[in-house]
View 1 (cartoon, one colour):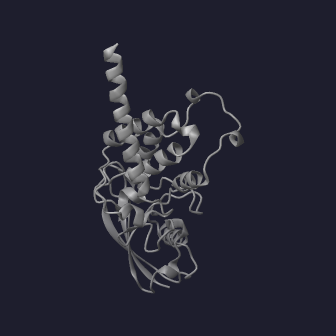
View 2: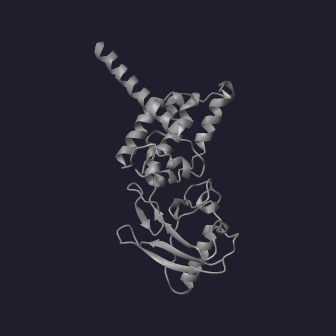
View 3: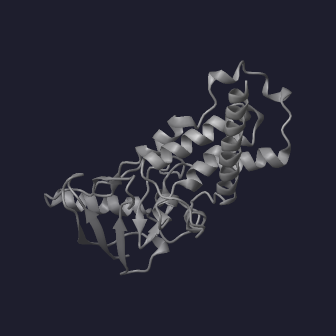
Length: 257
């Protein structure tokens, strides 16, 4: 298979970027998208050019680092897969493929197709965890959890933090990501102890980092490689409202003493 690639090239975070066209030929339909880019890079290196920089790690759809915008869609044209799981049989022979990095204020370009996604890490660091403040660790089998809740928590926990939801959203919102992280802890007894503080801290961090807000277009759910549901955004909003009301009630009680 032969392809024309239009790839975003940018030497550094401060450099001006541009789309550059390349051609690759003799690509197997069973090759992954990254194997195709590896072939291109080998060609560029042999000709004395700079290889295209892109992020990847596991190449198994687990880590989320392989995020690319391909032909106008996060992770490419196939639903439910990450870029590293995308194969060239998903494209037509002699097709032109446009490859870009994530486009969001909170995800500045580092070089070529690599963006700084540490903003998602900062949101997790703000509260997306169960701390030692919850007390000792009891045997998990002693805490009964309804199957419906445990299944919902597991589904939310499948989020790999790739940022496709942000890239797909016209507002560059991270609310599906935060909704998933809030949900998978809020649905379990171990996460309820810090639930109110957690959601407020994570939402506040999201706002500080420059992410937008949800406008219910459902594009995040449509492009999420793990099929995370927008139900988690609704749950996060309920958790946030509950936390605010609880904080106001506590304040009123303190002032009345």
